[in-house]
Image (tube, rainbow, N blue to C red):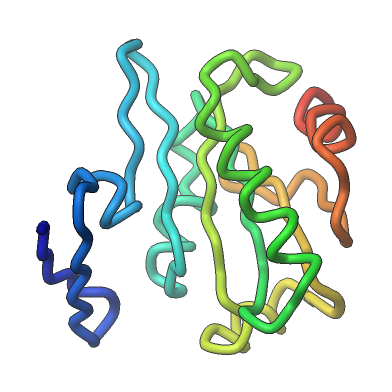
Length: 152
């Protein structure tokens, strides 16, 4: 059994799993064998959001921000698709950038959701060079998400 204590924001969370690796238990970052890696920032707070999505120096990557809520059924459908596609190092934007994923729980980060005028869930906003470039609202299927990514 693996037991890990993770500090997220101001709370400590203990994750215990049987037969899972540290990476899958914590789920904060996914590593790949290639030089480029895609990162997942799950349940990000405003500070993490600003650091990842709004940083203009991250010009080699695009960032998808998934605004969701635990009670939202369409969010439960789209979130695994976003994690799958952003983990796949063959999925790139139209400009050849790799993707990072930031997820924001709108119940705990409602001010951030208000700043970006999130009115319906799920809302996915794409950022490049620290600027919002596109978004979609609703649960798209995998091919529609791939098409959205290819336009970035």
